[in-house]
Image (cartoon, rainbow, N blue to C red; front, side):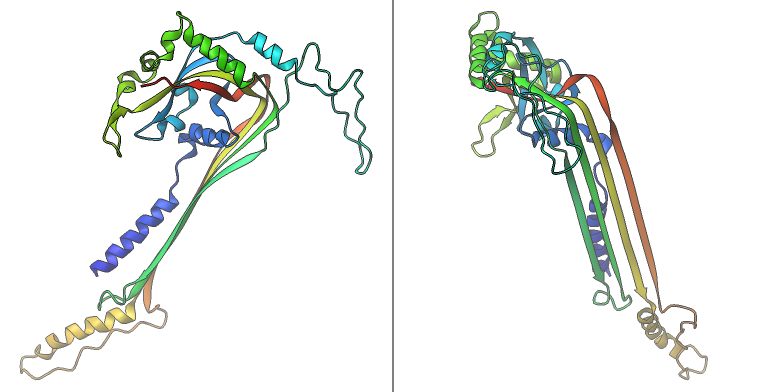
Length: 354
C-alpha cells in the first residue's frame, strides 16, 4: 500500500511540474532577450530611442552564481558612462557604401516584368551625402518552450486489499512571437571603433573607467556592494569575482519603427484514479469469516456472511477523474512609432585584467 502511495505521489508531482509553466507576465524581459539574441546581437529591453553609436557602457557580462546576467534587461546590468562623437567615423564609413535606386511598385499581375528605376549616375558610386538609413530585414520568429509528462501505475501487485490503477498526464507550452517592421541600421566598422575605445582608455580624463576598480565602482550604483562578491572556482578552488565586468563602445544599432510582440501560455492537466471493487470486497469478506464462525452462543459454526454484490446499476469499482486547462496571452500591439527605437546593438568591448 505504501508503495502505491509513493508511486502515485511521484507521478502526480511530475505531472504538476509539466502542467505549470512560468507566467508570461513575469518573464517578458527574459523571453525578449532569448528571442533577440538569436538574431546575433545584444538585446535592448525595453526598446529605447536614446542609445546611439558611440555610447560607452560599463556592463555586467556574466554571473558565476546564476544566469541572471543574461536574463536581466540591459538597463538592469549596465550604466551609460558617456557618449563619444563618432560622426566623422560614421560619415567616412558610409562614403564607401553604395546606395541603389528605390524599388518600383510591384506589378499588378504575376508573371509581369518588374522594371526597376535607372540610376542617373553610376550604381557603384557612393552618394556624396547619405539622407536615408541603411535597411535591414528581420524574420518573424517564434520561440516555443514545451514541458510534457505522463505516468500510470497499478496497485494489484502492491496490496491484497486494493486493486486498481491511476494515471495522469500534463503539458504546458509557452510561446513568444516577435515581429519588427520598418527596420533600419547604422554603424561603423570594428577597427575605427576599437581605435576610439583605445584612445578613450589612454586619455587621462577617462582611463580610470578602463580598470576593474573603475568599472566596479560605477556598477555599484546598480547592485551595491554585491559587485565585489567573491566565489571559489569549482575546479581550482581559487577565489575570483562573482561578476565579470566589461567596458563596451556601441558600434552598430538596430532600429525598428514598429514592433509587435505576443506571449502566451497554454497548459493542461488530466488524471484519474480507479478502484476495482470486486477485488476489495472478497478480501474483506475473507477477513470477516473467522470472526463469524464463533459468533453464536452454542459454539456451532455459522455459515459465512453473504458477500455484498454490486447492484445491477452499480459499476464494479470506482473512479475519480479530473482535468484542468488554462490559457493566457499578453499582446503588445503593432503600433507605428513617430521615430525609430533601438531593439539591439553590437559593440567592441574591453575586459580589464583582474
